[in-house]
Image 1: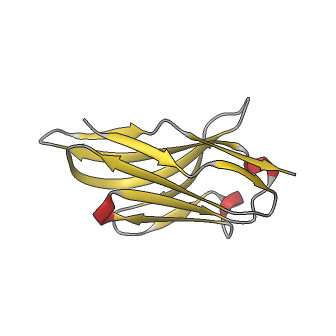
Image 2: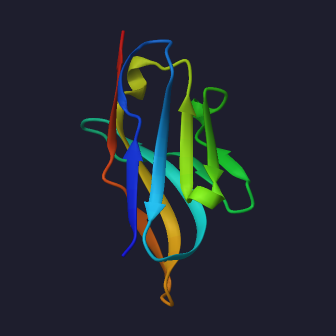
Image 3: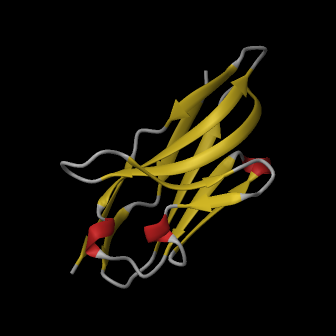
Length: 120
């Protein structure tokens, strides 16, 4: 069984920084795409950033220049460095990954989410 566990959320003042981590564990054969999404109260979940096994990355326009996604393949972990945080970045942040486990097919996994609150 595969699990994604996020950490690093919390309360920060506007202009501050946070680093989120998401570790995948279990019977993992391979991980392709890893991504961060977020969902603010009353809003739909939105894609924040994506990183592929090749190392290529992609960002939502509003996060470019402020957020950086990275991964450590040896640790099956993806990170999200968030700088110059704004109150509108307040949301629950979710980790998402395409993972092949054991001898099974690829599957889309989600973490439980971590709260990020940015005060003005």
